[in-house]
Length: 321
Image (cartoon, rainbow, N blue to C red; front, side, top):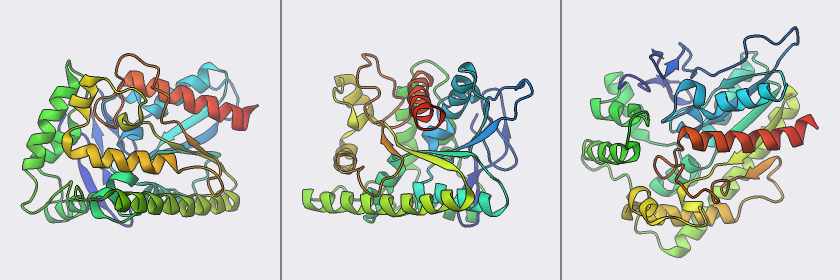
């Protein structure tokens, strides 16, 4: 399991997942996670959907057939639509890195009919970590990949540990603590804890401006290459209207409280002019009594199903009716 999600250096994008074949996780030689798609379209020509995002969209904690892209494909097929979904999400990638991957695919002649982005947490987390909007997540990843051509043992375990055994969240938290201690001396993942409220407000505004510029760029790409798109701002534990006490203890440690505040400030200001085809779906899990989170951002397979249902609902209303 620890070989899953090992990363290779990738020009322009920083990194991509290495090829891997296992019982629950399969990644091809291009770094693309396996997605469930219908085998028979009964003579109809299917249209293509490219889905981009970070590790939540990639499917951290889920089997191949239960990632958001796979569940999206299943739901569309169940409703009688003919689509092939490709999972181009990548672990820790931001919206900007996703856009670059899309641009590179378009340059090579790949032509999607629809493009979906499921994003948010990585953009806020990197801005929080480095103090500037639009930063690339985890610069240390690239350094490690270039120096050793693979991630360290504990980094592989941290990424590869999945929610496929009992008590997943506690195991994830325990390994995370070990992994944080294994980082290079001087690397402070949460070094921005000293932010004032005014600094957080300014940073949240900068994140929104970066998103607006990115969506405008995406809109130009869509017109130039004749595809349609949707951008979804993902749900995280911070945005739940009612957070259970056990969720606070398990999923919002003390060193993430400021990050949670930045995410809320950013979320509250999103949308409106400049945010074409943008949908804030942060509250889709608010009415669920049980927790659908594996940690502060990653969803269980059941949570992925709720997210996929919302994406399909919006997709049908925007493009199929």
